[in-house]
Image (cartoon, rainbow over the protein chains, first blue to last red):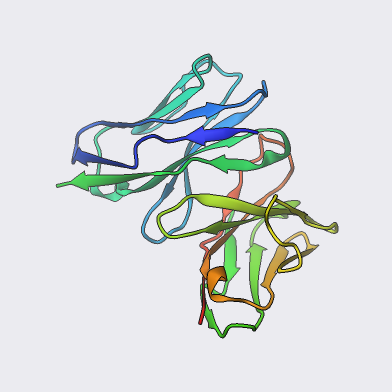
Length: 113
Length: 117
């Protein structure tokens, strides 16, 4: 079975600074997708970024980028120029055969002004 | 973008009663819908996968007779918590997708907070 591990229960960042959230996963599948979701206090799940496993190029979405290391099964999220609105719970997720999402435990990101 | 709604957003019920939660895809046809459960400050746990017109597939440890799922149309799936007890109190989230491939993005509803007294 696939597993996703987020080893950082909480992270803090100063406004305008950069922060990196860690995620590792385990799978025997060769074709899969990886995601970062944001869950603000409203609890609405918001897709931040996604990465196709077969693509070597790291995905980027404005201030959000990933460092995808397939051999190491690592998928970290970098948030640049952090904003107060980035404060939320961040979940790393894996999707493989059958399109089921497996979520990590989450990382609470606090942004200090 | 694709929008998924859930109703109700909050529900409080007495122990022993049944509660129905609706999940609707508003601007697309959802071949597959997923139901998750989330306890406070914890991750989302997949409960079941439902495909339109067929029986839901439940994850290990989820009681299918307690959590009844119906996906009668391409835009509506319902989760009924039968004979609810306080331990069923949780945040229930649905998601919808147009297919079954790992390439298909899941769009999430805003969730339903269930409190069983």
